[in-house]
Each structure stands twice: as structure tokens, then as C-alpha cells.
Length: 468
Ligand code: G6P
Ligand code: MN
Image (cartoon, protein in one colour):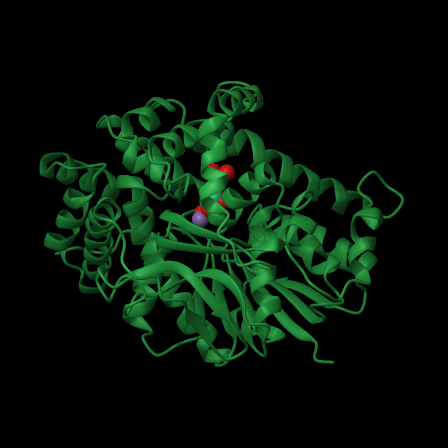
């Protein structure tokens, strides 16, 4: 049986420990020969990497594991390259989120002006990274979930048009549907989801029962509308305090479903469709960045350091024997709810995709792919996030017919903004950069766009290419 080589780019990410645990759990369906972490930030990566050493030594000793900042050591001979880089690190996330607030605009890492600033950094670094990978691993699958994925996907299409093994994906739709299906007594493994949109701006339009073919979405939406007050009360209950970001997001999401109850939207649509509500969620002094620093950053790095200090997990409070034992013998159907509860969904949906690739299972998954007629009444060049058949050599999107005017209008505006941004970066073109910022619904004013661009330029320093 073939054993695979995997590298995780962005080895120092707080998502990497979960990702590695998941690889340990899946040793039967996804057998590995080598796991490597790669990062340009050696210090961050070493904290996660030292945890990885203990993890693999104890639970998966036959795997060769190391972490490196050297490209050749990282990429040579790889079958899968998982990319979760954050260009500019959290320091720049801070600027992306806070600068817009200075202008009374929403500051968000992937939507609005902040997303455009992040896009500039990310596109530059992703292009370089993909070129490096291709130098050492011509045939590897490059699976990217670095943000802003819509913009990164658009850049990949333009810069690497013939490379069919670069796949951009996102966990958010999986997370959304996974949370609502229990309302109608279903699990993700029992349904096929039909979805379209740009990344972080899309809609489920059908949820098909795998056995009967019945579309369960109308019933689900009806249920949500009928039980709206009750569900809102429950969602409110789950907001532990006023800085629980995802609690508030899903509380507001119910409102969006009730107002447009014919499809199931991505949570990120809230920023565009309810900008005032989304704006009120944060302030200049406190954005999601602050919560992440106090929360996930502190806890994940603390955990990694503790494990490394002990030098072992088995027999300690960090033992994961019970967590992994159900999976070590597991070879069959794999769907994220099985690993969902303990492991971040961020990693689980990715593994589903990989399993469908290596076993040529032709399962349906959401990936970013060039429209080319998937949605007839949208620009053929748009990089849609859409339901596709995932096989060993090919990814084939399902046709989606036409979409309504409301969605079409929103997407065309957003796509104009995103593709202008990518052109601006590739051509070092200031005019297009200004157009991109002005076009964005969450900016919407050339004076504000100009001022923000100046602020972003200064804050981004060397990350900011020259725009002439
Ligand atoms: C979801 C999105 C990701 C995004 C993440 C941010 O998972 O799909 O694209 O990076 O949320 O979460 P955070 O907790 O860092 O705000
Ligand atoms: Mn995402």
C-alpha cells in the first residue's frame, strides 16, 4: 500500500497541532511515510514542531517527522502540500482589522478593506511558495486554505492556469451545514450539498439525501423559520460573553436565514448583507484579532510547550490514546463529524478531500474552481466555490444552472473588486488598486479608499509591493 509524504506549510499555525493529531488518527485510511512542517517563522514553528516530535514518536513512530525552514528539505518528494500560511502573521491581521475601523468601516480579515490588504500580502507569498513547491515536487497536490482564499484562488488561476493540482478550499460551508443538519436529524455523511458562490460569499441551494435523492433544504429552512424564536434563544445562550465571535455570528446568521429563507447562506455573507450589524460587533479597540491573541494563540502554544517540556503524552493529561483508538483500525467511509467533536473542523474537511483523491472515490466536495459555465449567468472566469466531484486525477464541477438577480449582483460586484485587486498586484498598478478598494461594498467611497490604501501601505511595510 502506498504511503504518502505530507508537508504542512505554515507549520507554526495554531491549526497545525490539530492537523497533526488528525494525521495520527487516520493512519489506516491515509497511511504516511513522512510528515514535514515548513514555515518562514522558525521560532513559531519550533514550538509546534517540538510538540509534533513527541506526538509522532509516541503515536506514529514509523513516520519520519521533522520541521524545517529549508525549501528543498520541505518539498522534495512530497505527495501533498497543505498550505495554511498567514502572510504577515497576526501582527498584520491586527492592521487589516483596525485600519478600516478608523474610517467607520468593518475591519475583517477576509472581507472588506482588511481582506484586500491581506490579499495583497497573501497573493505575493502564495505565488512564491507555489513556484518553490513546483521546483521540488512537480506532481504534488497543493491544497491551499490560506486566506483570503477567493483572492488567492483568482491569483492562482491567473498565474498558474495549467496547474490542475492546486486546489483552494475553505472549511466554513462544511461548518455551517454541519451545525444545521442535526435539526432535521441528519449527518453530513448522509447528504450531498449543492453550493455556489465566491469564497466567503456563497449559498447552499440544495441538500440532497444520499439514499433517496430528496432535497432536504426546503424542509430545513422551513424548520428554522418556524422555530426561529427558540433557535435564537438557544444561540444567545451559547454566547458566553460579549466577545464570543462565533456565537454572535451564528446568532446573526439565523436572522439572515429568516430574512432570505430560500437558501442557506455562508456566515460571511453577513458582512456584506448586514454591514451595520456586523460593524457593531467590534470596535477600533477590540476586533477579532484581540480575541484570537487572548484565546487560541495563548492556549495552543501553551499546550505545545507543556507537551514538549514533559517529552511525552501517554500517561499524562495530554494522552490521546482514547481519542485516536476508534480511528486507528478505521479504513472505510470517512466524514468529518466522526472527528469533528474533538478536532477542529478546519482539518477534518481537508482530510475528506484527500481521501477522495487518493481512493478516487469521486465524492462531492466544495472547492474553488473556474466558472466556465457552472453558473450560466455569471462571468465564465469567476473562481467559484462550487460542488465538485473529487477524483484521483481530476476535479469536475457540477453544473449549477442560473442564479437569482440578488446573488448575481452581489457576486459580480465582489468579483470585480477581487479580480481588480489581483490584476493590481500582478501589474503593480495603483489605478486598479484604487478601483478594487473603491468597488468593495464595505468601502464604497474613493476618498476613503485612497486614505486607507495609504495607511495599509505604511502598516504593511516590506510586505506591500510597489503600486505605480
Ligand atoms: C473560518 C474561515 C477561515 C478563517 C477562520 C477565522 O474557519 O473559514 O477562512 O480563517 O474562520 O477564524 P478565527 O477564529 O481566526 O477568527
Ligand atoms: Mn475560509
